[in-house]
Length: 345
Image (cartoon, rainbow, N blue to C red; front, side, top):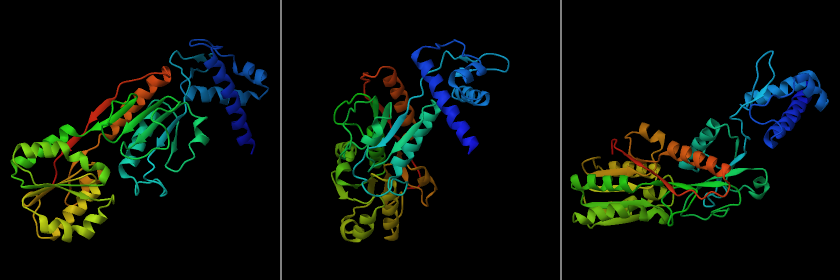
């Protein structure tokens, strides 16, 4: 109990000194009072004052060595508190986890790492959170969003904020970074043409069926007009499993190509096609649209259009840093190209 009280007191002293640094009382390069002076000023014990100074040093705010007075570093800056907001109302009630939101979970972790690299503490606000309870305690936001689903927060919240979008938005939003799949999709379509594909299927939920537009354009230029869409609501391809024999198999013209917006959907397609006696890379080609790291270890491993998770997170953290320095910044939209990865399907 005594140790906990000492840490709590040290944290209070730390916060007061930190406030003095932020206010300019101790500008960069200035020396802090000796530990005994700090203890007397804040009416705490010497060991508590030393602990508070140690906390500041560990946070990179000051530099201190035995026998010398602590000095405020020229690179010291306030440690802003950042909210990572998973603002996707479509996910709804289920607990936010890898099982319910694969790419969102990976992107969330990448953002956390990018913020940790910059010594910016972050709190996760998952779908269903009462955002209003948190916003007053935060200095900035990184919002992980799907452009094709409703949100809980406005596009431009009052706090400095950066959007990470799952596709190119309909307008050039500022303070945003997004995935651009168009070049990868075009490469995929050219590959299908060179392999003599006669039919193309897009497998996705209704909001993402239009991802296939660059593919359709290339195929039609080369006389391939049989392009179809299969609506799949499940992340795991449950609809493919139930309806494949009735809605896809009778309509197949081989060789056929499939692009699924999710990797698990692509895996289920491969299972069903192989179960029907068809051969990968001969009778059919399947491409997944997420690029989950684990998909490389599936058998067979699907070809994918890989989401650049780390590049998106790093870019968003960098942009947020600029917004924190200039709160009313309007940084232009940045796009990160996805990458086509060829594997077994």
